[in-house]
Every structure is written in structure tokens, then in C-alpha cells.
Length: 639
Picture 1: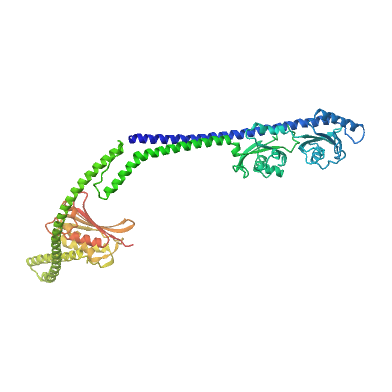
Picture 2: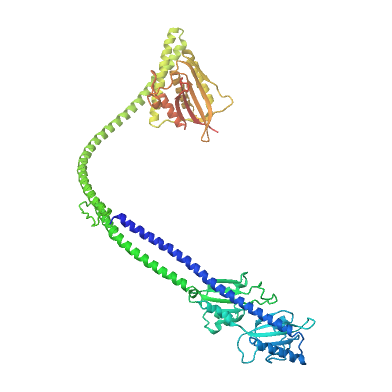
């Protein structure tokens, strides 16, 4: 099987896994919808039941109004009226056998009539049904005492009370109806639901009116609430009580449920329902709960089955993929890896056996074996070359030793050369000084012009020899890094003025050159530098300009510049001579670099070393107009 086919199998497996994941999401969505439908079904059942209770109550209230209209004369405890009213009650009770008792109380609360003759003469003035009815309201509640029941009656009783009016419309008593709760209305929810939930009927304040948990075990929270007689502490009661909706459902924690959670559903009578008069303040509620496993057992069963099938399919796919990958890819690659490690340790004699399958990995193994043979041949060739290189290396070491000795000799010769130059320069300075001094004395005393011109030649050449001697000594100091600077604070404007004035006096006699410099009278250019060395730099630049300018103008400029937030002074010497030749431009500031017939080529090298020792920079360039050149250098300016 080709690797492409194996990868296709992997791709199909991944697609299958993706489809299973998508199906898992879909089953979760389906489960959520089924859960919502289950909740909606229970909500509808409870809503219908509470509506049936409201309709039943409405019919009972109609009976109270009918009897109230029939008994429009106030019944007393004596006389024929009482007998007549009692007969009316008995006939109504016989016609409506769903009432367990019908009673009348006068306006003081004394029971004056009862179709069963129970409790005649007893005072009911403290009972809530009397207090509301005597004020013209309709009261609905459950019986909490035995004033309506005989000793053998144990069932829950619902009581309704309403006012009785005399012929003038004044309230002069109440009518009290008692009837057993129609549990079939409530139990219809349990019959319709597959989950068989337990139903609880509550009053507005959370008290139990009816609970199906009375006949079942007390293993759940609603059962415990039923036993306690109130639901007011349960979250579902608070939720429906504070809600604007007539029905609410939610899942709350229930430690007594097998799953630890239960679905609670509650419905309440609609305050805006036209079937109930506004005078009935006690609106009833229906509450039920189901363990989530019991409520959603079909949904959970479907989801669990799908999860089980998904896990089985994924497990089979993973095992199949593992077997395919391990046998056809992993094992051959592992063998190649082990062979690579052995070859990496230097054992090129290992034999690589290609796998039995003819695929890319088999081709890789075959090519890897050929590569091993090639590497082995190259290694043997390299070993032979290495032996030759070792022989050549020994020969190079011998030559290197010879060159090292020659280099030592050259260093010694260079040292001797420097020592000779130092001695020669010092020795040259010794006779130059008296030559200059005596020549100047002779020139001042000699009157003959011919002799004076000869003495002038002697002076000029002696000064040239003096400068050469000084340049040689400076070169020696620079190369030995022993050039010392005697720095002091001075105005660079004054220094340049003095140097330019000295050169003006000398060049105007022998050269057709105009030397220009305008001193900056109102501006100070204070620097901290060596007066003598800066004078030497400017002199070298002026000498260089004079050397290459037969006639024309040489100008010296001085200006302030700001470079990287640092004040600098820029000195420039510009001439109108021949300019800088291209052959020498790249080595302009090197030793012995000169394009003139006269000169040693040391002046610019010395000037560069002096300027850089002061923290400055020097450069040269041809003028833009093509006539002459300009040499510039900068120095740090004091604040």
C-alpha cells in the first residue's frame, strides 16, 4: 500500500471522527430540544389544571350568589323563616350532592343553620372566612378546623363563603359552602405524564392545600415540604411567586433525588382571569417536581446510547489506525532511525533491509542503503586525503617556523630602523639650530645683496631640514603612541589670525598668491587643545595649499557647527590650485602619500593624528567648481 493510500485512510478516519463530533453536537441540540419539550408539556399540563381549578371555583361562586339571592330575607334563630331557609338549603344540597355542607351565620358570627345540623349555635366570628365574607368579599380556603365536619369525615375540604344581604341590600350574615377537593382535576396531570409526577396544591402563602405525597414515600424535597405543611422556603415557590408569568420551570439541586438534581414546575392562577373575582386575594398554585433522570430518561437514554456507539466507533477507528500506522509506517521508520544512529556512530558496515511493502518508505530504505554505501566510499576517500593533508600540514609547520624566524628578524630590523631614525633626527636637530641662528645673524649684518640672497637660500633649506627633522620625530612618537598633548584653553580665532599673518608676510614676497582670512571679532571660539600642535596642523594645511597653488587665492574660514547636540568648531583651508588627484584620494592621509615634486607626504598623516588625538576629524575634497581643493577639520567647542 502506498503512503498516499495510507494517508487517505487517515483522512477518511479524521473525516469520520469529525462527522461523529458533529453528530454528537447535533444529538446534544436534539436532547436540549427534547428537554424543552418535556418541560413545556409539564408546564401546559399544570396550566390546564390550574385553569380547571379556577373554573371550578367560578362555578362554586355562582352557587353562592344563587343561594344568596334565594335567601334574601335574614334568617333568625326563631320563627318560620329559619325553617324555610333550612328547607331551601336541604333541597339545594340534595340537588347538588357535591357539597358536603351548607351553613348560614348571622352577622355576629353565630351559626344559625346547617343542612346537616352540625355546630348550630357555635360562634364563627374569629374564622377568616367569616371576617372576609361579612365585609362583602368572597373567601376561598381549605378547612383548618372541625366546625364543618362530623367526627367520621377526614378528607380535605374546600370552603367558600360570601355575604348575605337583606331586602335593603345590607349585609346581615354569611353563606358558607364546604365541598371536597376535586382531586381528579389535579391527578389528571399525573395520568397524562409518562413520568408520573406528584402534584401539590398550595395557597398563596405557600401552605399545603393538597399533596399527592401524602400517599407516597417522603424521599424527595417536595415530600419533605408536604410533611412540613409549607413550600415557602423552596426556590421554585419563590420563583413563581415573584414572576410575572403564570408558569415557571427550573432545575434546582435536590440532594434527595437520585441524580442530585430535580426539575421543578409551578403554575399559578392568573390574576387577570375573568373567571375569578378580584375579591379573592388567595390565588392558588400547583407545584410538582421530577428527578432529572426520571424526567429526561428518554433523552438521556438516547444520548447515552449515541455516546456509547460513538466511543465504540472511535475506539475501533483508533485501533485500526494504530495497527496500520504501526505496521506500515512506524516500524519501518524506527528501523531507519536505529540504522541512522548506528551509522552516526561510525559503523558504515550495517546492512539496511528494505521493508516487504513496495511504497515510499521501501524506496526510502533502498535509497538510504545506497547513500550509506556512497558515504562509506567517500569516507574512505576522505581518510586517504586526510593522510595527505597531514603530510602537507607537517610541511606547512616547517615553513611556518621559517617564516616566524624571518618575521622576528624583520621586527628586529624595524626596531633598529626606528632607533636609527630617532638618533638621526636628534643628531640632525643639533647642527640645524646653529646654522639657522648664525645665518640669521650674517643676513642681518651683510649689506651685499648677492651675499644676502645666498644666505637666504641657506636659511630656507635649513628651515626645511628643521621641519623634516620635526616630522620624523613626530612620526616616531605617533607610531610609538607617545605623542603628548599640552592642552590649554584658548581662542582658536586668535591662533589662526597669528598663523595667517605669519604666512602672509612670507608668501607675498615669493608667490603670486592671495591669502584671505576674516577674523571673527564678536565671536569666541574657545577650545581646550595643544596650541603648538593645532598651529602645526594649520601650518601643514597652508603649506599643502601653497605647494599646489601657483597663483590664485587661499582662504581660511572658521565657523560653528552642531553635531549630535555637541557644539563644534570647523576650520577649512580652501585653495584654487590643482586639486586632489584621483590616484591619491584614497590614501590621502597615509604616510609618504604625496603627488608633489617637493615634500615627504608626512604632513597630512601627522595632522590627522593630531586632530584625532583632540577628538576631532579631518578630511579633504575637491571643490565643487573643479578648481582646487578644500581641507577641513573640526574640534569640540567649549560651552
